[in-house]
Image 1 (cartoon, one colour):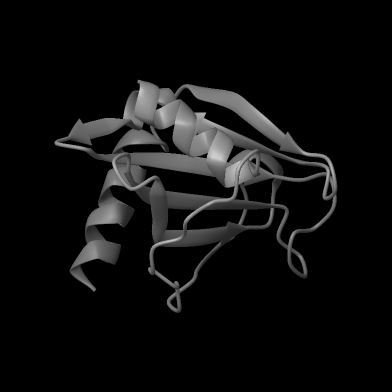
Image 2 (cartoon, helix red, strand yellow):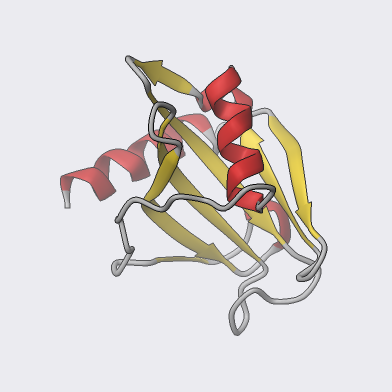
Length: 127
């Protein structure tokens, strides 16, 4: 619960106030959605990295939600990542009504080579 509260506060302070710089990182050709990273949110410590990620699609990702906002943690040594918090949004590019996903699977994921997750993790680990 504390993680969700901290993530929400960070989101309000950083993303909502227009201080974020969303950079397009990769497009998933199958779903035609684009993944963005808030370049100003990237924080590294030891071999771990934290960042905000925005997934935006031209068609709803799930029911009526066109975008999702994830607060992510990556481990650059073991090349893995996990979602710390997730918010579904009814509008494009992270706007609209929000619904927090309370059932986030925060287990480590090892992305396969050349996958969307791999491209994003490579990007944030190099920063």
